[in-house]
Image (tube, rainbow, N blue to C red; front, side, top):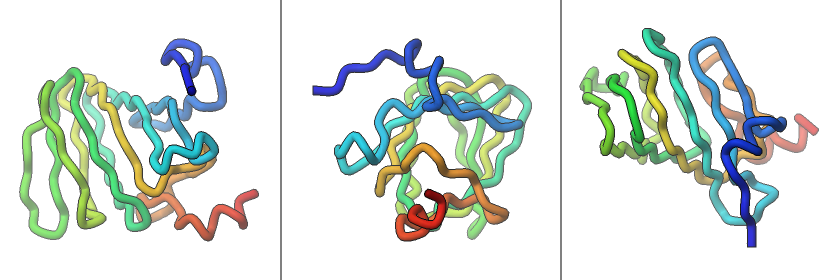
Length: 133
């Protein structure tokens, strides 16, 4: 059994920060669950463009308000507590945080925790992890 607290994980290398967000990875590839699970905070007033071309992601909004825009069709969807969205087509997207957004995120395949968004906003494919080690 795996038991962790968000508060403890935030004090470790599982907490990753950037200019527009921070994410604490509670479950990673090494946990052998077949997915990774993160609590991510997007800072108020920020815009973040992403494209998980190598991962599927589902996201549940726990608090805050914002919107997500899918870049292929320009559709904009509001995000508020209780909203879930799934990037089931590896959608290129923009997240806009009107207020601080607190999100629960699941990635498949799981991330290792060492990933950094590349110039396209993506994490590397799993086979590229070996090159990162």
